[in-house]
Amino acid sequence: MDKMISVIIIDDHPLVLNGFEFIFNNHPEIKLLDTFTNAEDTLIFLDTNKVDVVLADINMPGMNGIDATLAIKRLHPETQIIAISNISESSIVQRMLDAGASGYLLKNVSSSELIDAVHAVIKGNRVLSMEIEPVMEQPESAVPKITQREHEVLRLMSTGMTSPQIAEQMFISPLTVESHRRNLLQKFKVGNSASLIHRATEMKFI
Image (cartoon, rainbow, N blue to C red; front, side, top):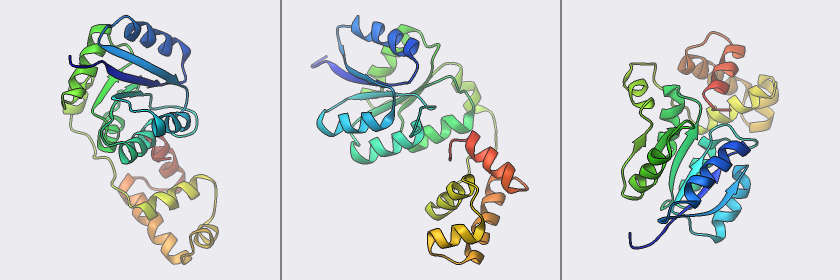
C-alpha cells in the first residue's frame, strides 16, 4: 500500500464500535480516525477531514444510514461507504446501494472479511456479506421509485397531517396531495395510509 486507508465508523451500539475499533487498531494498513454515534456529527467531521472509507449503520438516531449515505456521497463523492447492519432484507440492501454505498456487511462479519471489504471498495469494487448475496439474487418486488414531492408528502403523512394540512404546508392544492397519496399507495402496493406508513418506515423512506 502506498498510504494508510483512513476509516471512520457510525454506529450507536458500543459493542459494535469496540469490536470494529479493535480490528482496525490492530491492522497496520488502516487508520481509524474516529467513531460516531450519529450521522449529523459525522457530516461535521467530514467537512474538515478527508476520509477514505465510512462504515455506516442503517438504524441510527436522527438521520438513518441511507440518508446519511446520500448526504456523504453528495458532499464527498470520493469517500467510499460500507453499510454495517443486522438487516438482511433485500429492499434495504438495494436502497443503501442505490444511495451510493459500495458495500453491505452484516454485523457478524469476520475480521478478515471486514478488512478485505475496506481494501476492495478502495479499489472500486462492490462488496456484500456472503449471507447477503443469495438474498439479492432472489426475485422480490422492486424498491419503489418516488419523487421528491412524493417523499415530502409521505414524510408529512407520517406525522399525522391531513391532506389539507399537507397542502398548506407544501403550498399545493389538496387535490394534488390526494394525487400524490394515490401514487404512493400504488407504488408501495398497499391499500391504505396506515399500511403505507408502516411499509415506508420498514423500508427506511421515513
